[in-house]
Length: 107
Image (tube, rainbow, N blue to C red; front, side, top):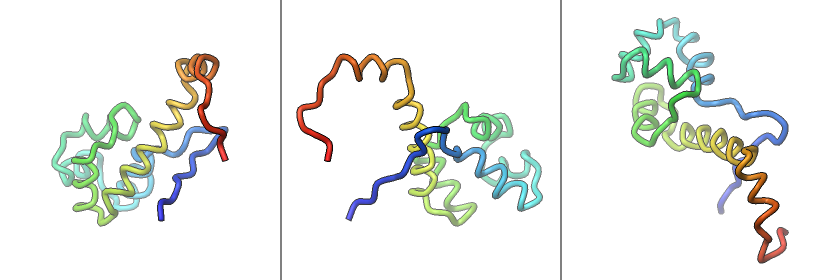
């Protein structure tokens, strides 16, 4: 059975970087440098993730799973929620909604 990921309609979803920072790094009492080292990345790369300037890739999701014990799928689902929200609320999508017509009724 496939479950649909629920994406907020009126606000951006919480990104994986914010969850990493607030729920993991701070809770573990680590500096950004220490946390980045644990992930095998440098601090600037980690900082880009927490600020939403770098996406969680499958490779990063695996790193996070190894270090934090949270499944790679969870991290990728969080990233996908952000990506879909941004796509659905983009100017390009607004143009496409006017231009494209559905072939089947949603239901």
